[in-house]
Length: 433
Ligand code: SAJ
Image (cartoon, rainbow, N blue to C red; front, side):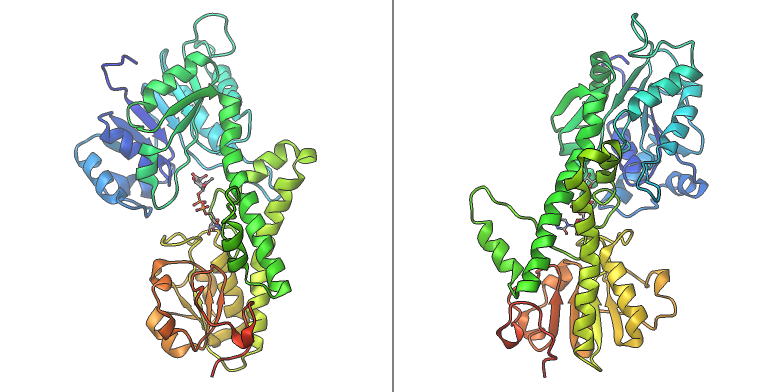
């Protein structure tokens, strides 16, 4: 790839990471060929529309498609740079499944030519980039692969994870620092040239295995720290302490920064990636494994606590506030809030209603439960018990005067001024008159 000529780029996988990446690369002036197995996704993008929700993505995709810079297809096309951004789920035993990465590698291998760069972005267990290289080497013996030849290789292969936050993807894709992990230093330099086209953050060069581990470590670090906060909240409930007060005070220490308890950890990254480390070193990861258990267990603690509150308030109407996996997004997949709400709806039927400003209807597992979707005003008027599951801004904005008489179980700590029943710190079980 010559520095004065923009490379042609093929992005394989047009999901939450692949599509924004393809659009941003296209905006930088590269000709981008996007690939997805779903014909529906391909058609949607080729109309200049999007199949996922992300701030400002619709306008960006519309712009680059209408300028002819981004085209989607179900087939990989010859390009100078290939970016693989496909899912890496885990199986029922938490073993990582890299079959989508290898399938993408098979497709890419068919069209590779000397001088091309292949970059893996999918969250992957350590060693996956080398496996991808080995697959390409097996399919294309005519091309010299990095790390397998003493001559100058024909291909460059690197691992470059994304670290963007859903809801801020476009901003963070451009501004976050990146780890650029080459199979060899030369591979890293090639990948660096590509990322410099659209990344304003610092691009730090390393080897592929370190970059793979770095991605996993970032999310495991967060999971462990959220687990600490969640464990504190369970202990505080048991001791009758207000966990928010304890954390607020502890965080005044200059070297303490405890995260925020919640109903558990949702999303597709933090609850998944730590398992990739555990799977790679099962004997040496008791902390990471335990943190996963604490965060998953927090969901059941919240359900039990909410049930006790509901049982203690016979006849009361219950409003569950929020279904999303975190604040101010419309992503309900892998959401602890959703699991809590549907469990309560199944048990208590029409007494339970759900408020979710980002949903137009309840997810399908609510079918047959009699739970309805209501707005926050109706909930404040009709429900006596409010269970806060998501810290959406709309909920945070409800003033004390409108909720002072409600019984509240606030799993996110958004209403710290809520009166404590009977002088107790923990959420009380008495229905306010
Ligand atoms: N959560 C808490 N307490 C906290 C922080 C988060 O309970 O103090 C919960 C959230 O409510 C949510 C879950 O954790 O259910 C995850 O939310 P998040 O905002 O921490 O992270 P994600 O999953 O949206 O995105 C993470 C990010 N990783 C890190 O912050 C280390 C993001 O930068 C990654 O790019 C993304 O995973 C990914 O794709 O891997």
